[in-house]
Picture 1: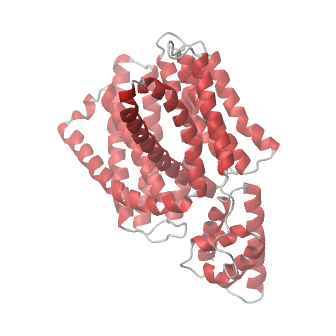
Picture 2: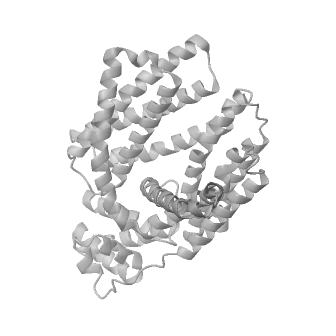
Picture 3: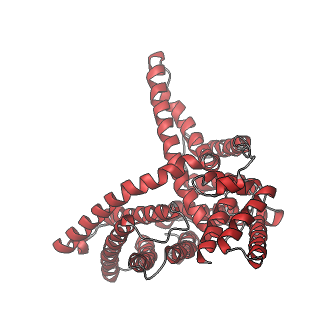
Length: 447
């Protein structure tokens, strides 16, 4: 029965990615699937046979199951579900919706810059609110694509409204460190807010949380590709127009912000409509970069431990190490999201990931030791408090991941347990980012 449960989880994860499908739809389809399996099992079929026939029956009334069969063509799915189905029949890509929301984000950022007096002035409120001019359009795009009801639209909008009130009502001081921390943390907090409409309102679903992790990794890949393409385009444009005396830098000052804002939605649309392209890239990327980061982290941990430099971390080095720890954690998460839910046996890549996590854990402990010693000498500041909190959050996550990874490698636990740990821990990152935005500034008198 465990094999059937993994197949149901895999089927559910794929069906939930379909455009216009929300959590309630998936729950209803899964209930129908399980009911069919139970009836077939009662008739004398095995659980696996019942699952295959139930999916076939469900495929007759729901195209998403046929899409799932098409995606996994190497299995029995294709023979059972795709008979008579036109391979060219696809769900509409929704490019027009993406274009509308991307244009909205591009226009909003330019209106805000004009209101701020750009290029003569660049007030701090523009940097504080930059995320609020872009991510609401991404959330609205997901809400429309998942066909959320009015209550879910309200739930989606409320955090953005509250964030706008917080960052604009707080009495920020001159050269405020807490203001700088808010500018860095608000995008992270609101990115998690955008996960609610992406998941169709099913925030308690571990499968949907892992889907959002997968989406984040794929979105990042597409966004980087768009940025690289845009950079090449701007460079060629400059080379062509410079002899004509055109001020390309002034044009770029207006084009780049709109392009960066609109690309947030465009990259999301590409993930939704071109999933197979990046899904083929994900295993390759994780296989390439995970060993490299594992080697780099191991060397860094050994060097700092042997030389005793761990106690001499300055602010810049701590920032670099924290960024590196976040990247490693993101890489491990993305690699995990790229695996099949039915995976039961550990492989060599799991061992490399464990090495990377253990090395990151050692470096995190060194940074924590340095931060605690520094706070004991000179006291708390907004930056030290935020760094201390981030490293504590990372420490718990890395320790749990290392423990469960080791148990999985020794076959004393399952990959499912490790995935559940990561998806259960995701809200902790969201709460930490939100606390930096809401709690930390008044705690330090907005200094």
